Image (cartoon, rainbow, N blue to C red; front, side, top):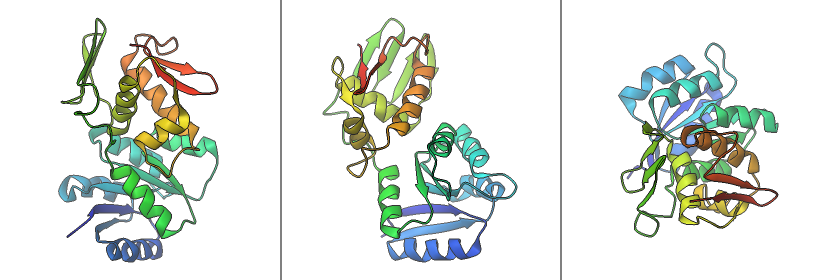
Length: 228
């Protein structure tokens, strides 16, 4: 039984071969693409569960490809890159990536990141709030629909899970580590830059004034709090 279908996008055929062998060995079905353009063509036909996307490719680069994917799909995207600066990670997350893995990496680390990107938040609709309603914000957690200022808003799955966890713990500060581990998994906790990006994206989508948020508040040196 397949563990899922993964689209591997990298211009280096040797890297694609190594990754395919490792992923197939762990029951994943693998589709390969050599360029960002090839990946965008393959997506609607192959319908993979996740994309592993090299950041540095000729032609359409990884960030541009990620933005193009995110414009029409919520599929999890994991960026792979030799660059290890916070600036590069933030750029990838801003482009819509769910995670960022630095080369060289071990297959066990990659598999853990894949599982994290594919997982759903453990806070199910049964155990958490079913809805949040305010004059300028409506969230239906069962149907995953959000309306802000009377308009429908589309959140990516990770953005929605971040918001859902904050709403479920409304009124109290949620630490960076607690939020990272709730949404991404137990292997996370030291990636506050992830949260800065995702919180900024959520604020842009649900706050009337993202620079002066009403709902998703920053708790300095601690984390974030939903004021509902």
